[in-house]
Length: 225
Image 1 (tube, rainbow, N blue to C red):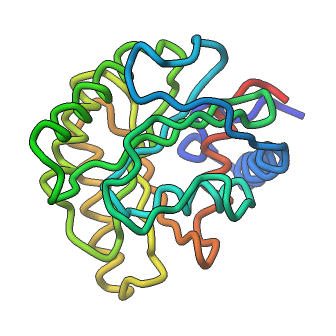
Image 2 (cartoon, helix red, strand yellow):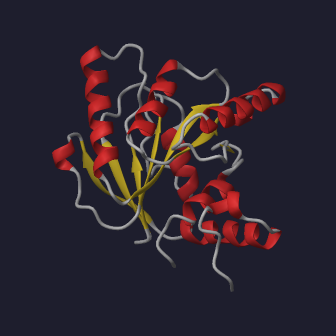
C-alpha cells in the first residue's frame, strides 16, 4: 500500500487515495478514546508528547457533540446547555496515536471582559507553546452568520502561526441555499489567512454528515498505525 497523502483529503488526487484516507480515519476512531487531563491555567498543561489537534469555536457551536460523534461515544465530551460554562482545556488520548484537545468556547455575550481576556490569554499561550499541535479545527455554526468573535479567533490563530481548518457544524438545520453561501464564505475566510487550510468540512453530529471526512483529515495528522 502506498503512503497516504500527508496533506489529507485536499491532496487526495485519486479515488483510491480518498478511499484510503476515509478508511484510515475509520480505523483511527475505532480505537479507544479516553479523557486523561484538564487544565484551567497554562502552568497546568500536561507534558508535550505526541501530535495534538484541538477543537475551538463559539459557545454552543456543537464542539462537544462533534467530538462525541467523531469518537462514536455519547458522553466522552460533556455537552453543556449553559453557554460559556466550559472554562478549561480537556485532553483526550485517541488510541495512543493522537491527543484531542477540547478548548473552551469563546464569544459568550454574558461573559465579563475579564473572563474574555483570560480566555484569549490562555488560548494564545497554549497555541504558541505547544510544538506538537498539528492543527486547530475552528468550528462555525452553519445556521448563522460568522460572528466578530469568530473573526477574532481566526486572527489569534493566524498571529500564533497555528494552522487551522474551518468546520461547519449543525448543517442539517441549514437551508441548502444558505449552506452553500456559508461554505463559500468559510472558504473565502480560510483563503484570507496564511494559517487557514483550504478545505472546509461541513458536518452534522446528528446526521453523521462529514464525520468520515473529518476523521480522514485527523488521521493524516496522527502517528502511523
